[in-house]
Length: 93
Length: 464
Image 1 (cartoon, chains in turn cyan, purple):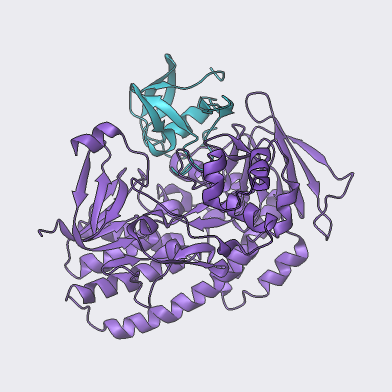
Image 2 (tube, rainbow over the protein chains, first blue to last red):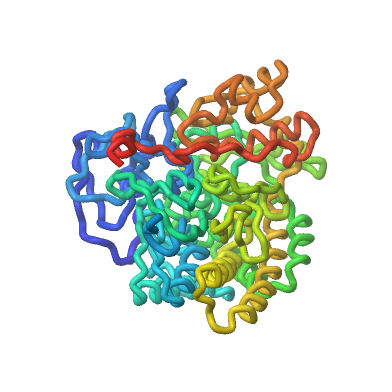
């Protein structure tokens, strides 16, 4: 949920599992995904349980997603870019 | 050997920036590396708009001081390499650095300062791996970096002062806080607060936050234990109950909170991995927040020309980090034969301030210390190592088989072998082992860390 009445960067478009999603420059990828309602980001390695971000500061590696074809990117440590192609594990989309 | 620069600083938080300011002021070539895309550490993040309005006021004024520091460094032309991970620190102060584009290269400064900060620690409960259960720091970061609330309605739980700060931040930005479930009781809080009188600004900030919360109608419930988080694919509800004086759950007090976000935090652990990998000596000091790097009065570690400042020498907050950054900066200037005028007097004053902040830190760390009895309440199905999906039942079984050290558990059930390299589960495992073997948490050896200390792509490593 974006906070109202604060200055934001220019509006850009991300593609999440092929679907266009609005975001703003300066936002981190995990925040933009949350803004789009995506809390589930991936499945755990062994038991395939759904996971989302925990620490938000690059420590826990729970928010790993695929960005522009590269798997295993920490979404909390990357800023959004226009046209970024993102793949996450369903089912939030 | 040709040197890349005079000083490399790992971490662009308050300690790293304060040191960079002193060193650049002394005319040295300084490079700062930080894996975050934003400068200013976890306290500032993307600075600017959050400091406005009544709710943004602080008696302590630390954020204003930090913003001034960031502006001064920009004027001085000090370059902060954001999105750059330091993968290792090797003999001769050589750092292996992965830049934001994935290229790996060596940086060989004359001195290194490690100011890698801290991370949060957790008390695991059933369902804490569900999407929607996040750390209090993660919630703060969403607000500060991206202007995003963690949810329409957020439930907050845990120990320590951060949960109240978060409740205030959410309320003043138009979000709703369902409740703050304080692990501690009111009497414990008051006892600890009585230890703070020498730090009036922090005491006033605390009172101010509580007043704002009361004004916003936020419910604070004390002695609450989170029993379970549940939901199908993501968090849907949380069950919590009240604990009696003996720590046992009072039956009939269970409450279910429907929510899509629970923010929890139970204290902090210093990020000493790089220093451990380099071979610096560490010590376990509970008043400093657990395993910290051993430093002398001038903040040099047991390795020559490797200095440490900020939370890595003991958890005590941004003000201590800033003071230590200055002390380390002055010490490095001296080492590189560019002593600042009046440095000995300056250092004396800073050392005094540092002692006062360490006293505050001791209260903070005590506030976040859990009594050992929480371990027996962990449900069998609770995941302990999130990376490898290792559950409490696996840990108990391995312990029954005689694996009663962190290294033993790693070999027995892969606990701590995943992507985060045990950063999340190691403090938990140590608490579990200490409680179950009835020993002090400092009994086990300091974490052993091997390079690369963070995950890196093989392509970048091979090309570099």
